[in-house]
Length: 321
Image (tube, rainbow, N blue to C red; front, side, top):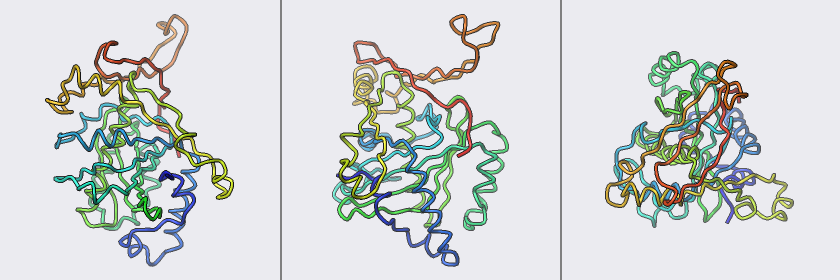
């Protein structure tokens, strides 16, 4: 089965009708925006988070807030997270599996500083979001050193294979401790549809929090998840690096120590926060290392519950795309 990332690169994407109507005066510009994202995807690491989406979809938790995603620091300046939909949870409802079993969803993420985001957002293109942008400007001005993590939503139907560019920009403001300060959505669809799209950001935010955990391992799944070399040569497509998060040890901790099956995910998911530590020449790390280092978070639990130690490199400052 072809994953969403390679569907986007190998086929001509469709664009949602509200977006087309909004750009009727500049269809060339709209097509260029879609093509720009496809070019970004060619250079982006791809994370397959099917298991995280399943974990989220089967959770009985209804209310989700910033504290449920304790570390959303972007691991790369640009990356793609995708999942095959099995349990689609939207605000106030769970869509029956028969209606969404053929869907593939994904977000193309890039991180910038607040100043760069404000300079590149092209406010005039989001004519229906002027009030939202005015409030966003105020928030960003109060956090000049934070990350602005922007995600463009893509989807496809696995039956016909045609990918769709939704035209929704879902954005999160993340401070240097990885804490989610605020998130907002810009788009051309009706408010209820935009709210549904924004709710799907919870899945990659949850995956990002797991990604920073010591007992969650990232495996290279390029050979098993990516298309065969023969297909890549025939379609003249690049080899993308696919990664999968192994969250089974984390599941065991939540079941055995957090009693997640009875108390729910919100009570069970006690994730210790990651943090930055600055070491000076007067007090170096291990007596020799000077600079700022990231100490990743971990899921609470014992080694008997399946703890796996790992290190993970995380960006230490916002970067330009």
